[in-house]
Amino acid sequence: MKRLIQLNLLLLLISTATAQESSPQQSPPQESQKVLRDYDWKGLARQQFLPGEVVSMNGSSILKIEKTNDTLQSFSILKISDPSVIKNAYFLVCEVKYENVTKQSVLSLSCFLPPAALGSDGRKIDVRAKNDRYGFIEVTSNWKPLQFPVARDALEGLPTQLEAHLDMPGRGTIYIRPIRLLGVTGSWWSPQQIALIGGIGGSVIGCFGALLGLLASKGKARTFVLTTMKIFIVLGILLTIAGFVAVVSNQPYAVWYALLLPGVILTLVFSLTLPSIQRRYDELEIRRMTSVDTMGS
Image 1 (cartoon, helix red, strand yellow):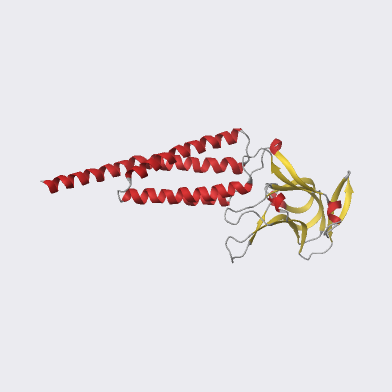
Image 2 (cartoon, one colour):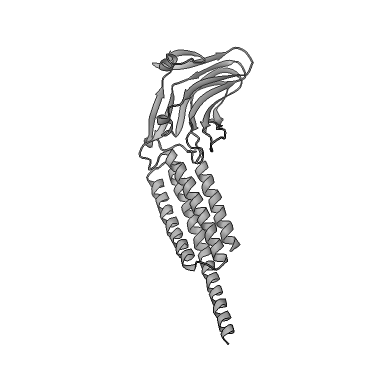
C-alpha cells in the first residue's frame, strides 16, 4: 500500500505545482485575444514621470530612452496597480526598436505578489519575455514584439502591482511603442479562478489519495475506499475529456493544461491501483474468515 500513498502524494505535489505555475506560458490564439488596456505614452506623460522623451512616429506616440554613459541604470517604464485590470490580464506586450546599444540591456516585467500568510512578506517575480531572446536588447534592431506572461500563485493570489522596467548598462537609444495588457475572450475561467481551482482541487485530491492508501493498508472502510477510487477514476476521465474539448475550443493554455494534467494523473493512478486494492481487501477477508474457522474448530 506504500505505492498508493506515494503515488497520491506525487499527485498532490504535481497538482499544487500546476496551480502555482498557472500563469499562461503560451500565447492564446490571436483571434481569442482582447486588449484590456492600451497605455499611450502621451497620456501617461501627463500623469507620471517618464524616463525618456515622448516622440511621434507614423501617428503613434513612442517613448524614446537615450543613454550616453556606461553606468548601469534601471528605468521604471510603467507601473500598473489597478486590480480590476490585473485580475483579467494574461500578457503584457509591447514593441521595441533600438540603435547602437553598446551593452546588453534587458526589458522585463516585475510582478509583485502579496504575502502568502499573515505576517509574512510579499515577493517579486521578474518575468522575461517569452519570445525574441527573452527581451535582450543589444546593438541595432528594427521593431520587434515582446510578450511577458503575468505571473500569479495559487497561495499568494494575483499580483498587486505590475512594473515594466529596463536595465541598461551601456549607451544607446531605445524606442518603445505603447504597452498593452492582453486578456482572453471566451475563457472558461479567469486566471485567478484557475489558480484557486488548481490549488484547492489538487490539495484535496492528494490528501484523499493518501487517506485511501492508509485505510486500504489497514484493511478498513472497504466500501468507502473502493467507491471513492471509482469516483476519482470517473472524475479523471471527465477532466481529460473536458481538457480535450478545451484544446479544440482554443481555450488558453492555463485552462486546458489545468484540466488535462490532473485528469490523466487521476485516471492512471487510480485505475492502476484499484485492482491491487481490491486484492488486498480480499486477502484480508480470507485471512479473517480463516482465522474465525480456526478458532471455531
